[in-house]
Image (cartoon, rainbow, N blue to C red):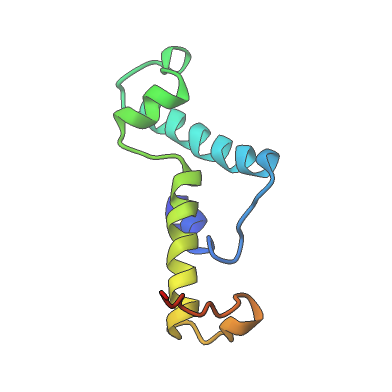
Length: 98
């Protein structure tokens, strides 16, 4: 699930908190089932999502979204992504000290 969700981050980029929470809930449900089926805990005694995600070393999807956003801006500005940057960003002129 995670690679599929992460793959489209630059295209599908929810900014509303309710949409972000829906995606986080998908990860939490998957992690809960994974931990329960691994035999570490019974399904009713699986820890809270925050501690459970820490135990399997998962970060929230929102933190990955920030990283992918910065990477996408870099690709657009440097021409790696074949997108006209002038449609999205204004060119800043460097300030000259007097």
